[in-house]
Length: 564
Ligand code: TEU
Image 1 (tube, rainbow, N blue to C red):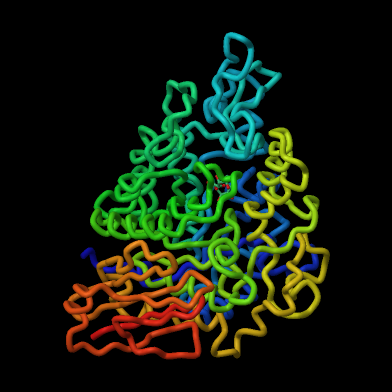
Image 2 (image 1 turned 180 degrees about the horizontal axis):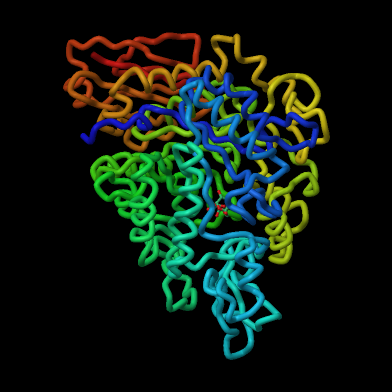
């Protein structure tokens, strides 16, 4: 086993700054608000804070449309506020992981403004321009991930430019060495300011097939689009960033890999490849996509969820890769509402998801609000939502024949805004997030679901996360143990083991509202449990059951034992 890196025992906390804490009454969160809450994160046991984009941006995609990579958006504060945050993190032995968005820039970026001036601009080749097709239309039929064509027509020069996301997010041309140099320069700028990690936004999309073929509807092995997903030079480009920045500054890096494959993620994150520290993949978060389509609903496929988690545990370990573990982020609905019960079994469910995830091999990510069991908000009207993707899809779904209410029901389930409502700190107005008018509504359940009510409650969801985070630092089996699935397609239970020479960890969870029981397979039980002693490390019910070969599990019960 490769020498354990400090970030393999760490837990990362993801901060969506716009909704974390507002200190000046603007209605949006700010950097000073994060600094104010560092003791809260430190007490939780967090080592690494992932700060999502706070750069100059028109905010069409909440900061993922960057107009200046090295200046702070005044909405979030000043560079002095950023420097203060860095100092306060350092005092607490914590580090900052900064979000880097270099597959595309905002069309408000100076580079793009210059590029669109003329075909001979020195910046023209920073972006991807194509002549109209023979019929005068778009160069090919590639689609934006936010709906509609991926090509925008530029009147001034009579060409189209590529936008895989919003029409104001222009894809950068990574074939251009000057673009790659600009990216290395901005990475070095933040590394010189003491940033110790980067989260690389959709970094596996940066290498496009230069023939720009028609989208023939076939998909790459990772169910993406093969001509820009894990493209021909992607590993070369990432390796270049490693050689020039990630390695020399000893940074921890995570790649967001849209529609990728296990084989590529092994290569992206095996330390011998000198690319990234770890990767996010999203296959386990598409098990409720009917026909793989995000905007077609179906109940989630529990067996597929367990199969995928197991496949990636075994495959990444075998290949020497490293998983970024997550069920939540700012682009996903809250897992609590999506996979379990966010009403009468809300507390048990939140703890079950935490135990299930944090027992796996990889680095866990806690998305703001997950640690207190925030569910999907109640959306009464489409005008309460802010996300560009959700607004586009509300229109497109109706163009496809859905009635307004049907479209809204789909948006309620899938919208990224489900995870973007303000952090719920206490029971004061706006949950203590802002003294102003919040940029997006605060969920109406904040009086019962907030940080303040959980800090001192030893049985709270917050303290359940705190204990799991501490266990990972304390027990090597969390980082080193080999994964073995124990349930064979059980309809309600997910059970797995983590095994090393000295100990065995058993994680057993009932993902249903039924009373069930689970039997550990005879072969495993006889081989692993013979004359051993089990200790319950953490559970989510009042019972503290000894591990037995046949264990009764109440609704959403979840337990973790260690056997020595
Ligand atoms: O997300 C890319 C991504 O895969 C998701 O946005 C997904 O494609 C989308 O929800 C459609 O289902 C990253 C950021 O996390 C996201 O917030 C940005 O909007 C996007 O890239 C563009 O930068």
